[in-house]
Length: 247
Image 1 (cartoon, rainbow, N blue to C red):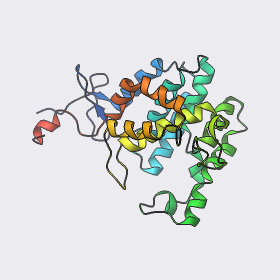
Image 2: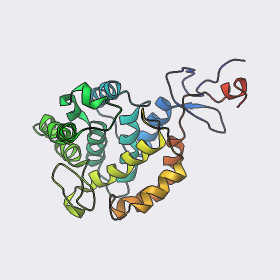
Image 3: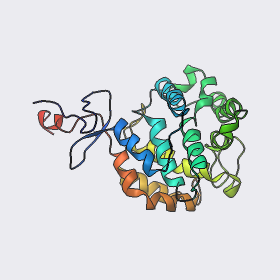
Image 4: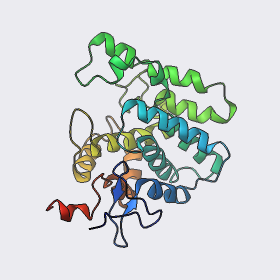
């Protein structure tokens, strides 16, 4: 039997994630590109460059699929509930794409370690938001994006890093991103654990509302649940191959 192919681009690759739709499979690349318009993102001549940088970061971290692009588009999708200006949405997208750019300064022995980090290793890891901010802060078109990079590990209750910011002291786009990044971390495989279901991740996000997450951002997440659920359903195994595997 011929392997399933993306109904948009015709790809049938073991290296791509696919979602099952009534009209047929959709690959991650096409699904995310279609979401740009929904998220209110206008075309920009620098966009491909920023996306390519994010892809390099994902490759180094051995992320599942297009991790940075997924969380960036989902963040922009939620941010559209609060922002209407195209420039703001573009910067939120770019800042979310480059959220981990500061990990360039983290040694592979720490970044790719599958075991629990030591206190000394965590101290090095926790420097990455500051490293990323310093990389971007002098670029005029990335002013808001650099703040997302700096604050994306902060927590609503003040228990995050690098500054321990609390509540509305954390920029709203970073509070929105925190929900999306946690969703992606829970619903896609990691080297140290298997992915959980969307419903289990949703329950955890709701449980941590007011602590790890801004309740306003959690409410925005719940409003966008149908779109987020589809992206979280992406998987490597192509639908038609399930038949061959007896699944």
